[in-house]
Image 1 (cartoon, rainbow, N blue to C red):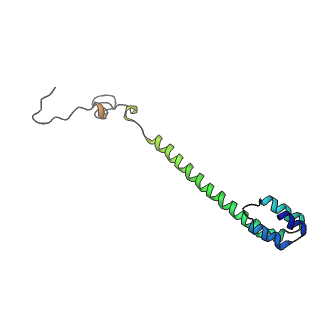
Image 2: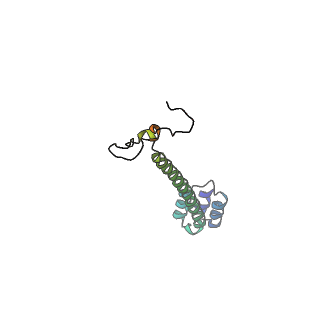
Image 3: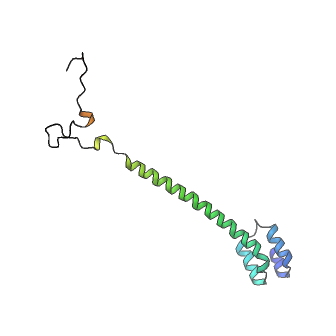
Length: 119
């Protein structure tokens, strides 16, 4: 139908067909027909709308991708922040090389409570 209007030179019907059949017409086809038949002024509203729609889609995809990348980066950095206790070097006791106090928490002596027997 669009080709028929373009061949006939019916500019108003060409523009109306672009408007009515918006979802069915590929932008490259509309642009080519309009350019060959000198109807680019009548195809311009259609082309502007298509360009706006495509730009909106790309922007939305860009935002989704950016959010996903940020979440992955955050997850990756969060997993790198955890250092398990068994990887920590033990601290030297009193009189040892470092003199930093007790050993790591797992090796620290239990505090004495009154009335309890010592092992």
